[in-house]
Length: 477
Image 1 (spheres, one colour):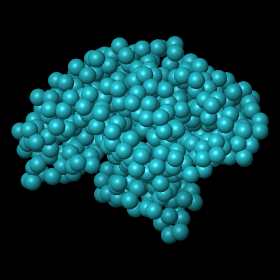
Image 2: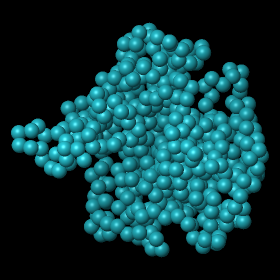
Image 3: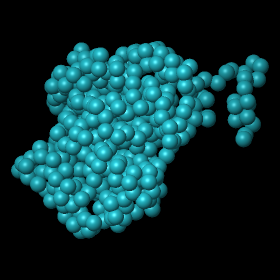
Image 4: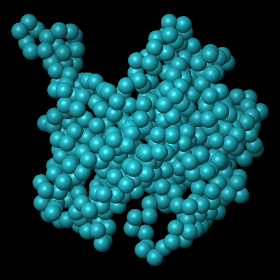
């Protein structure tokens, strides 16, 4: 530990010294998620201190519309923490911790029963985790153990989609189709293959939706057969794919994947870490699109991210097969799985969501959101507007005919870093800005699910301001 670190970490600064700011403490001591080195050094680091409704406030009092709901997770926004906190405080007073290893407690049992009632089809058995990565890790193990229990241990392979994101733990990262996230840590878990995702922007102009669906399903079945159907454990996909920018399924696609999985004895895992709990207007994206997976993984919105919680939901067919298998149990465990305080927070969150009819608000306002964003197609750099429910993306281009960012004078990354990100901060809107796998900037919006039509209008207006400023400062008019 350096002398500088020791002074900061040990306690108060020496007499007469200026106390370190939160920004300084964070830059010196806090290792942040997916944060570029510049944010630890030259760049200003935002420090948020308060939230209300769909907005958060920084140290200076500047208000920002949280157009990403934290990270696709604050379904209730920022005005219900006190009510959820009361449930948390009651649980802390009664039973602050207990395991679910060969034991149970009321919050976990009640929450599992509620999820069984909300989940599509016959999914009625719940295993709790603390995050989306842990949930997908748990699903990998469940799928492999299921096939072992059925006498098919060779079924070890998983099929995911290109550009998809499924987490950062070892197994979950192996499922990722995002090369830049996984490449540094390879070799990862063996036996993962990837197929095309459902992005239609830049597909052949003459291709119909039915033809696109047929292409995707043929590609998937070809890969299953090439690998050997008796070696494939599961297909994992998000009902609406987040990475790559709000990629919706074409008509018949998810139902076709379900049929292929049934035909070849493969499990279908729906990663609903983002699409679960109202983001598309239904409790689960699987219901929204009319598909019945064998396993659903979840996190984020289950407790509106007020407390970390995740898990998976499966049916009796899968779970009972595992329990009757050679291990005599689901051979996986987590110290914090089914934590009573987290489950109490989730129960309170679901009660509020029902009371406010949060999924109904998304259904009612989704068309308004879509229409507001369609207005932005006239902006010089808005090439595509896509998504569903409260998960929408603008893909930005400089050549609308070629559907690509072709400016040599102003590369896409420079436009985002030097023009669009500062413009968004100035306008007071939080959104996801990224460069996709094809080199185009993406502007992603996924607001709190309590946002009404007026709030959606405010959000899109702020995005419009940011785009106009970025286009002007970048000389792209």
